[in-house]
Amino acid sequence: MENIYIAPSERTPEIDFDFVNGKLSIKGEAYPEDASNFFGPLLSSIHKYLQTKPQREVMLDIHLEYFNSSSAKALMNLLKIMDESVEAGARAVVRWHYNENDETMQEFGEDFSEDLRFLRYEMVRIG
Amino acid sequence: MEYSLFDHEKKVIERAEQLVAGLVCDPEEIKACLVNLIDTFRQSYREQHRLIRVSDRQQEQLRLVKEELLVKTKLLERQANAMKTLNEDLASEIAFRRRAEEELRIMANTDALTGVNNRRRFLEIFEDEIRRAKRTGHPLSFMMLDIDRFKTVNDQYGHAVGDQVLRHFAGVLQGSFREIDVIGRLGGEEFGVILPDTSAQNAAVVAERLRSIVESREIKAAGNTFYITVSIGAAQMKAGESGYQLIARADAAMYAAKQSGRNRVEMA
Image (cartoon, rainbow over all chains, first blue to last red; front, side, top):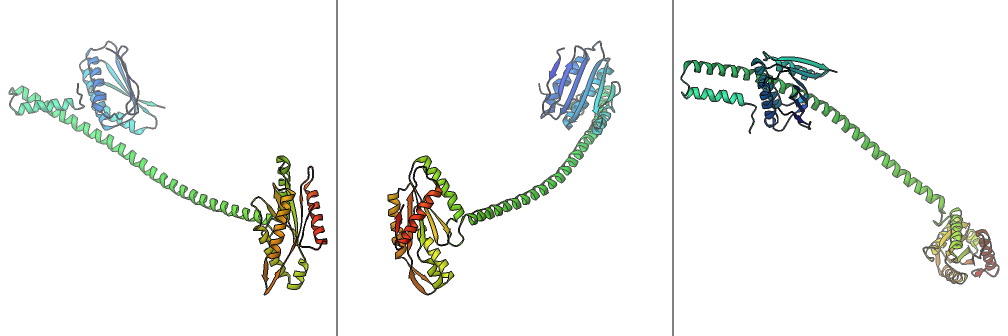
């Protein structure tokens, strides 16, 4: 699969999906004007990628400092897709990064992992 | 391709609608569909909870930021108002000082009784005019004027009338010269006039005209009506001459006018 790179903008995070090495990253702030159109293609490409059941364990690093409700829904959809893919046999881990003093992002990260049953999910404190 | 964040939910609802419409009849399939519906609704319910928490939390943060901003804005407004008041005070203080400075400057340069240049200021301008005449090569004349028998006026009518005569005389001077001519009171009843760009011949004409005006003007003071006359000595600056030498020559000519019977113009 082709790698995806989207430079960060004022409203959207940096996207770096290195499918060749199984390293995916979402970093920055997320309040796109149209969250469906921003996240839709990304989610569907991750879904397709995991359906190929890559040899190596896929690692997704999420390090967001702010996101709006639509982006939150997109993140939940993403985690669900990954959880189901792992259930179906793929190997993946999600690492939720948050800054040391950012209790809000820490709590959101913990919240988002609640419904996961198969996906490995780690909280990473930065700072 | 159109993306939606709610694809899954839409599909489940669609499936349930098919079920209700009777398109799905197999009991096993109906059961699976219902289970799916329950699962999806449960998940959706949890997601909604989570979203509301996210939203509430961020709204709370916004509210705090807004409160903080409001406090800061009020503080800034107070500071701005204080600065404005301070600035206004400063501006009026500056204006006051400028006025005071201007008044002081005028006081320092002006003869309080007559309003013409005082001796110090007159000599200052005189030096400037001499330098200018030397630089440009234009002629410069100087006139020394002394009111005749001023002591008699003072003795006869008193000092208040004497002061009035001086003011009257200064008024005549101010009304008789060009803008560029400079009038000063050099002391007592003695006045000087600098005539830039003026030769001795022209100075003589001007002096004679002035003498004639002074003699013709009636003075009314303290119930008395009388006339005064003036003796004038005038001279044109010579090449290489200093201001002091020019004044001395004009002064000598004025003295000669007095000696020759007063109410006269003498050229040096």
